[in-house]
Image (cartoon, rainbow, N blue to C red):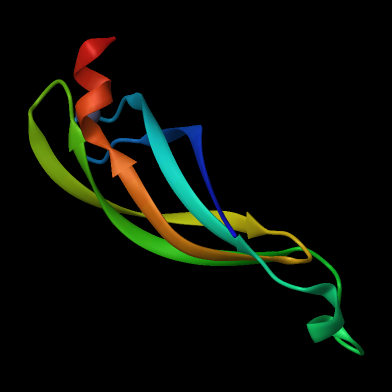
Length: 88
Ligand SMILES: [Zn+2]
């Protein structure tokens, strides 16, 4: 089972030095809890590097995101919705 959830994120833009809002689509799968027997059940943070587009300068930049991965879930994929930025 995979959940696709959109979440907003604020990035400090290295190009224009302002903050921009982006929408991330995070795909998570749910892991059967039995697989975690004897393992740490705390929230882990995973790092992903993605390309963002500065809406002011129309230039791409890379930023590293830190996303929480809770007990019982596995982050499969993270997509940046750069298109949505232009609609707002
Ligand atoms: Zn910018």
